[in-house]
Length: 360
Image 1 (cartoon, rainbow, N blue to C red):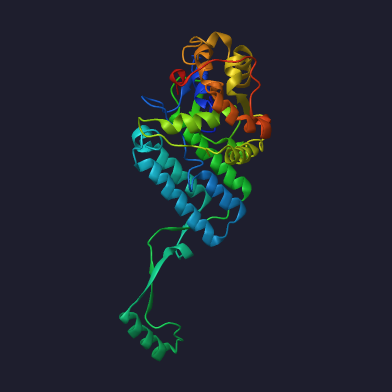
Image 2: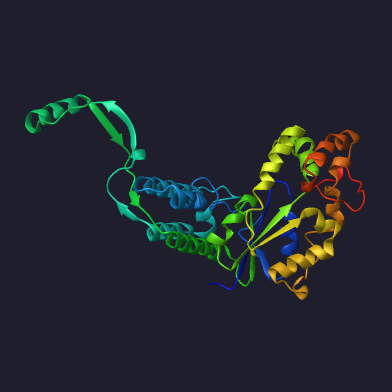
């Protein structure tokens, strides 16, 4: 196993994970995986029919037929990411050559064997066939076969089928090997720490110890719910370049319910591989937050050669207390503070900002 440390930095949309990424990459031994002229997000583990979906089926609702459809769906999903140049996600054929495809095939080979036969999902449709009628008549005459439906012809796909009933140890050992292969193909030479943007979501904290070795850590970035509500409703949804969109509910009551449910799923994992950091602490308590991250990732002060080059708390402070920009906004978020104060931040002083001073 490589001595390189792989770090997933994540948060909810807009919660400030990019700030932590910018801070960590100021250290000379740290690199950002697959980042070129644009940010890149790593999604193969949690994407639809990705590694986590496959594991949920294999470890909870598996059966001989279900294992085949689950693995087939996993292969399709990985091929989709490999063979399409999306740029900011997937695109593996362009970014790492054939390494991703090989890692996928090796993983599937390790947990399954190809078989003949059909699963339920191989049956694509049913149609009437006059030829089938004549064959049924012959079978009835010659073999005395009972006919249930005259002319019924099943149409199947031609996908490979698989049998896979791995034990928990077998599956997670193979999964961790797949994960480490992914880290190896994405790593930059001579970097002791590699950063992965949104490799997991905060709700996946309970999966960390099962899918990742000791060469992995996760930083989850949290943010004041009031700012997220205001930014979502009055800033992100109003963008003109590229089209704006609301990422969360824009009614305070619906947002409170939505945010409470999201946050409830972030605290399931208590692994030592996970650090929770508050976005606002990076700004209002910069030095202590910096030391906390350095201690967690075993970073040294002498490695911080580009301090405040990518993350400058004096600039980022303009992205806080946005709910105070207008009096009506401040009043609108009062109910958020009343109902879910545990998801807000206790600011040490009032900060003045404006829509013109906000930045991504």
